[in-house]
Length: 241
Image (cartoon, rainbow, N blue to C red; front, top):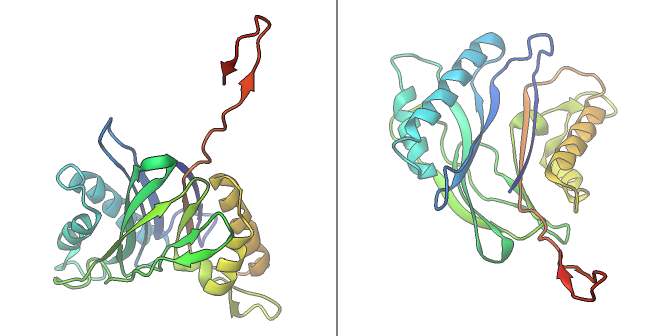
């Protein structure tokens, strides 16, 4: 897979905040990779501290459990009171190669905005997941589903800072999911890093310098399959490249 990612903190001077993303690489043949994107409560340094705890907890729990939905349930138990106001929304996805150059993703969500899929023909599909916030209550519901990305297709994870960016002609209108979907549809054929840069540019143009919440973007892409070409060397024998 290919990865493109962006983090745009609400307070540029601090470069810290409550949104985060992470990538857990596979550990050899037969194992899967995992990606995560989340949004903890609060802003600034306090939120950054909680973000660090969440990311470290994920890394530790992954030593014991690989299922995304089970990982979110375990993380929920680790974040429960007595400490109050320690909760997060999050999307976790297990990522593995599939047949014919495709990528399989098992996605679990705890109260986070649903991921978007950009298909090769320009269609943008919403992955219908919601679930419940992690760390708020003891008995949570985690939504989970499986998707497949064909070669060149992309799954975009994002925080609500992207859709709630206020701007436009009057400077007060939310960017919104519809505009995000429309912008994503124009990114067909772009590699993951260029796709994320394009979305950054579009959202930045909408903001027009206005203040905004933390914004995190993470694009997971199934790369285009390598094309087979034939070259004929001087000795006349065909060579595959």
